[in-house]
Each structure stands twice: as structure tokens, then as C-alpha cells.
Length: 300
Image (cartoon, rainbow, N blue to C red):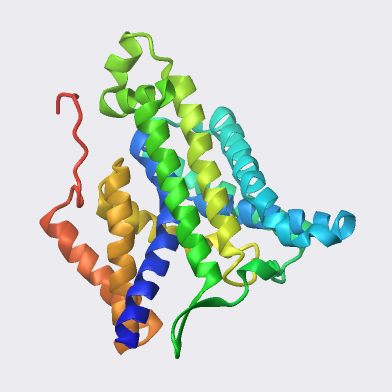
């Protein structure tokens, strides 16, 4: 029983991390068809912003250090979102309709960001201290404890999904985003500023990557190459879920998380990822549109 509960929790935990990493990419890739290889570096920006906020509290308000995370989360979102907005306005908007060009350009941008991080923070990894209220775990049984950091990440993922849902289905900007996703030309004809929608949504997707970077600080040291460990999994989740479908991204994240932890339990971490990848590839051969296909009003 304990092994079963732990396995379910590990699957939820891995799936939650994949969801936070991929949900911003789903918005960017789904709406603008931009293959953003710099998404991992936006995650890195969020992580380093958390590190800076921690150091700021250490120097100015050490007695309130336990509360720095409440400031780090919105700061990471703003820093990564602003960076994404500048990238979209300065470079990406000139490359719409040319996905291979966006791939090459954003890959170059990712290398630049990594080198900038090495120049500013150094090549070695740095550590963000876990607040005291996140240390320890929730005791379920005598020999089973669920770590508070993992539970906190679950909570942040839940808030992020709720926030995205409210934005997409309960705001005027979200309605414009759905219109552009379904039929860009028709949305433009009825007066929606598609360029403004693109810039705003790129910023939101980038900001969510920053939030992912912030919570990843709870799992271990961070460094300039932090994002490269997650970018492949992020694209895998987006493609499996169905390009442009947030609900598909959520479902795919937990499916891949379950597959990874299940196979890792009976083999090794590397072999678990390989087996999970093979299953996803086989599924996509059968259903190329992913788990949930995007319905549009465009004529094919």
C-alpha cells in the first residue's frame, strides 16, 4: 500500500513539474506556431530571479528570509514575461509563418542567454535555500512522508492552471486569444489586433516559464543549463497533448509523468525516459493530432 501511494505521488509530482514547464510553451507554440527553443532559458531566468530575491532578503531583511518565496514567484513571472515580450517585439514578430527560422533564431538566443548567465552568475550551480515552512513533509503513514516542497509545487501548478483557465474563458483578452487561435485572418477582419494578442500571449507563456523556474529551485541547485534539461520534455508534452490545447497539455503532462516514474521504478531513469518516449512516438503514429485535437474554423 505504501509503495502504491508513493508511486502515485511521484507520478503526480513529475507530471506537475512537466505541466509547469510545458504550459507556457503550449500557449506560444499553439497560438503563434513559434518553435521557441529559448523556452528553457526563460525557465532559467525565473530560477535566477528567485536566487536574486533570496540574496536581496539575506542582505536587507534576513529576519524575513522565510517569506522571500512570496515575492520571488511574482518577480519570476514578471522578469521572464518581460523578457519574452521584448523578444517577441524585437525578433520573433518578424519570423511568423517561418517555423524553421524561429527554431534557429531562438536556439541562438538560448545560447546567448546561457552565456550571459555564466558571465553574471558564474558557471557553477547556485543554490536557493528552502524556507523553513517548506522543510519536512506530510506524514501519511509511519514510514511514508510526502515532502512539503513537492506538495507546494502541486499547489502552484493548480493555481497556474486555474489562472490560465480564468484568463482564457473569463476575460476579453482570453476571448481574443481563442479567436486568433481558431482563425487568425477572420479575427483580424473583425477588428482584433492580432499583433497585440501575439505579444501579450508570448509574454504570458514566458512568464509561466519563469514560474516553473522558480519552483524548480526547490528541487535542487540551478545553473545556466537548467532549461536544457526540460526543453525536450516540454515539447513532448505539448505535441502529445495536442498543439494549442491547454487541457491536452495537462493530460499529457500527467501521462508522461506516470510513464516515467513507472518505468524508472522497474529499470533506470534513462531507460524509463526512453521507454516513455517510445510509447509516445507509437501513439503519435496512430493519432498525429495528439490526445485532444484543436478545432478551428479555418478551411483546410
